[in-house]
Image (cartoon, rainbow, N blue to C red; front, side, top):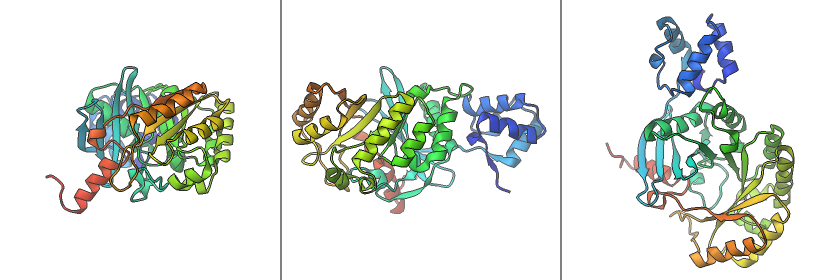
Length: 352
């Protein structure tokens, strides 16, 4: 019989499970507290449960934990990148970013990614599998335990396409924001997608208070197709219509991610197209100087070119910021550290 993934159960499911075990309802609250507040790594840690109940849990459930295999901390800005080993031996990466407004964790939602975006290292080897809610939670929980810092913001912008793992991601969002757990406000949760249009509508209908970030990266279909294969399936008009629907249903401002790639999408002609595209929309443009990866030949433009692009948008009264570069000295781009680790492991170069 397949064991139940204990940390992936929401509170109601945990209550029902405890009832099946013949336990009183208050036991569910105790277990939930161990799982999502005390961040227990084993059932034996749950010392206010009877030995009999702990044995029942060990026989019928599994408690997913992640093993940290590498941690790199930037000497430039204090950003930490974590490589975690999943129970099946797969590797994912997560990032802790320190800001004045709080500590943000960027998590992966899949092992690898199948979206094929040309500037992203996460997609180089395709998607291996989806992450379970418990595994996504553990990325946050382990970073909080290892760093000793309270996490206040979570960004689903690491390896993987969150809307390609829709049900598990929804459950993760519910668990991480539950007031019986870490209780991170939905407003402090950001989901980034390359633009799977039907799922944007489905997410909008959930009427969550999370921030939706669209990986746009171009304001016309042809340029976007050269950067993102998903653009061959859903055009920009379809994406913008879905964003309008999301805003109508949730009232939440849309964020558009725009990686600036030298000689591709960072000139003033592209800035004008972008300004026209978002004109009149309640949105924010997040400009991202592309983080070079050795497997691609995309380059970052000069500071002057980046500022020209930003200043043009500002003159059009568009809310725009340049994302602070973080962790460049520790393989900062999505998927870089994982790719490097896997390559070393395949070549038998892992450190003992």
